[in-house]
Length: 329
Image 1 (cartoon, rainbow, N blue to C red):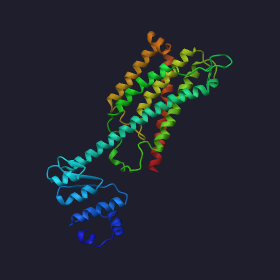
Image 2: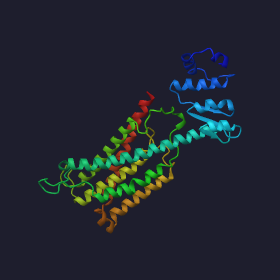
Image 3: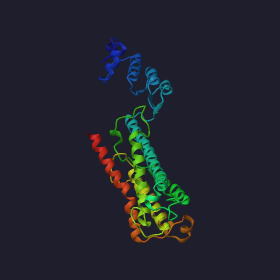
């Protein structure tokens, strides 16, 4: 379309035209401004690039005005929101990619911390509500309820196990092809409904795995065990810690498998290794046992905790598979 042809169109016709036409020739400054306004009135987010004085009105009106840093005039640079220092349009693409990666990492951070905290809250809540079912009673008549986790253990999880993997996700490399996604709408939330469903369901799986570990070792309950309360609580504590470390692999993507780009983030694996080492220390070191109310476990008991902690990984793999199938359909 040419500028002369644009002059013959009213606003409604121009709005319909901009949905189909990509190239405009011999346009005046008022045409550029009108095109920007027409696209915006159609609900589009508009970026405008320019270098001359006649581009300034459209740059000012656009959602993101980009001026050329080398060839651009001072008027254009003043009107723009962004200056392209090297005048290379490929830099815009690289900046969009990096911005999407940063936003994705913020979502990973939130997904991991919120699901882990939901798991802790549900563990304590369901542990109290279902104390009689899993045998978490202090007295034989069930008149006194024992908390599934001690306050110091919850503090340990929040300060040590949660923090280092979450920080490592802030520098996670691109896992999914962020440029293959459609642009987000202005009304989209950082945490949408699907993400909330994943957070709550993963937290519930963590809590159930933790409580089952306690029940597995305690006498009575659904599964009759033979260990003391200290050992059972230590098993639950360790299961929850390991579940959160497994969940750090889940949180790297909403839909992609945890095994996709598994070793791309060395800092995350360092955080996981540190979390495992510290958990072994807090369970097996005598003076830390006194501080955190833990008891030593043998290899079989450790293996049971690892197996139960990994349930959150396999659950989320199944959930992601169903999401991918639904997205394709």
